[in-house]
Amino acid sequence: MKFHKKIVFILVIITSVSYSQNKKLNLVGNWNMTDYWGNKSVFILSEDNYGSLSVNGEFIDGKNFTIHGGQNDGQKGEMKYVINYKKTPIELDLVTVKENLIVRF
Image 1 (spheres, helix red, strand yellow):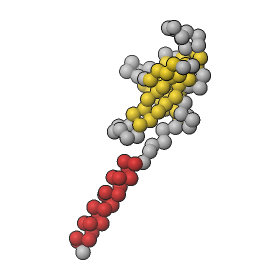
Image 2 (cartoon, helix red, strand yellow):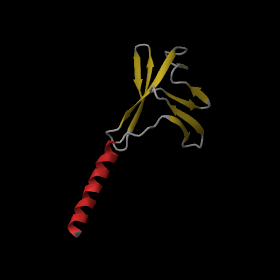
Image 3 (cartoon, rainbow, N blue to C red):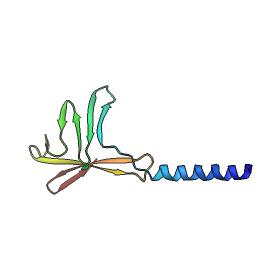
C-alpha cells in the first residue's frame, strides 16, 4: 500500500509541475511601479496588447502618443507589448511603432 501512495504522490507532483509550466499568467491591468530613485508611476497592460505608462510625470498612452525629441519629434506612435512565456522568468518586450519604423525595448 505504501508503494501505491508513493506512485500517486509522484504523479501528482509531475502533473502539478507540468501544469504550472504551461499556465500563462494574465498580466492585463494596472500595475504600480517604483523606480530606483523612488519615483512612483503606473504601467497599464490592455487586453489588445497595448501598453501605457508614465515617465517623468508624463502619461504615455500606448494607443496614441506624441514623440518628444529626436528626428521623429511631434509625430504619433503606438506602444504594444509582447510576452514570451517560454522563458523563466517570463520576458515582456515593449514595442513602439511609428509608421514604418519599429523600435523594440
